Length: 374
Image (tube, rainbow, N blue to C red):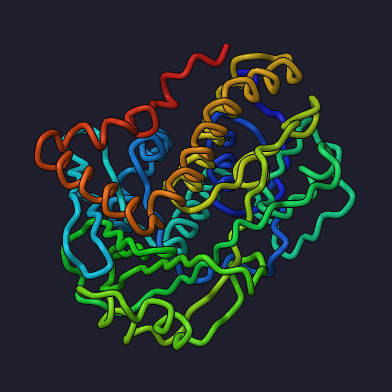
């Protein structure tokens, strides 16, 4: 019960910050969340949550609310650019007790904010924190341009990957609740349904003429349609219904060299932003929130607890970030490599479909609740 009555401030009311706030407040801490935006709003986008993150939300008592706000995800279906199936990976086969969910990001933020307020968290909006306050602990959940990370690590320059992504949400009648990945030379498109008759689309292309980072740059949907004009299956119909889209350059940020100094600590994207090719950005943030809370609650020595948190999280998050980097290459194969890669996937799907998914058991099978933190 090391957290009982402790004052903790969190910078950032995103997924990492709000989940940490809930976990800390439920264990007796007095938590304030300082958010720069004047209101909690999100650019429309979907998220895939895998069992490693859902276990945390269940442990926080949010399982029923999550189920009401999301859809189950049954499979990941890889298809070539014509729309022909390459392989379908049944998510239930390898993790029968795990839950994969599809949710709109704004719905998840709203769910977490409501739960935080119920737990007694003070969420303060329009707070542009420049000089860090001095509570017993300051948690930087302030995203890609984290000021807390800069205070710990100094100025860093991210690396442009040569890839640009669009994302959009369209009205759709739903369809099978699964993630579909359409793979083509130098580009791929991911789509899955969301609650309330919506469909999420993320489309990535290799290009070097546009290098702006950040999710809120509006673009003409015609550019998205032109980039994926050669794709078949349902893709042309989906893209025809895109009326608004945002575009951003994909940058590779190194996992933070320093996560904490005994007084300040970074979590989520502030510590380990990732490319969107393993659907683990939000999941890692949720894991961070639980493990940080557990470490602090298990040890009265704050410096030692933060060191334990960093030692537990850095290797796992670094490995996930690298897996996402690798997937970026796998989705964009060209020429003979593409033919061979797709043929191998098709054969594996027929002979041993469970083995394809089992490569990621170390991600989905991880249980943060059982992590030894002391």
